Length: 97
Image (cartoon, rainbow, N blue to C red; front, side):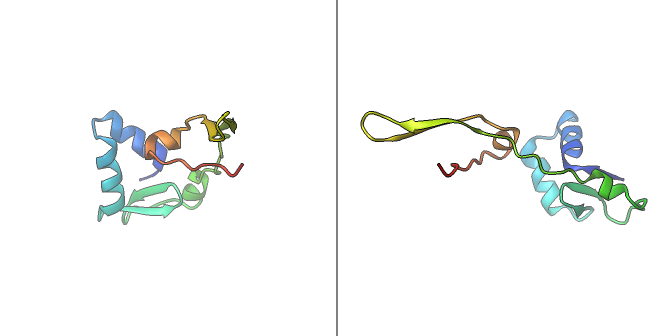
C-alpha cells in the first residue's frame, strides 16, 4: 500500500488520530517508509511500477502576500493570506519586499 501524505494524513485524522501523533508516527515508525517527496507506504509492500511517480504531486505555491506598506510612524506592516501549509505547520516566512 502506498499513499500521498495528504491522503494518508486525512485518513488518519478522520479515524481519530491527532495531527501531532500523525507526524510523530510518520517520522519515526519502523513500518512506514518514504518512497518519494510526499509519498509514503508500508515497508516491504509490493508496489507496481509507476505508482509512486503517479502520486508525486507538483509543488503548488500559493500566493500568500496580500498587501504591505509603512505606518505613519515608520513601521512596516504586512498582510498575508494564511495557507493550508501555514495552518498545518504553524510556520510562515516573511516575503522579501
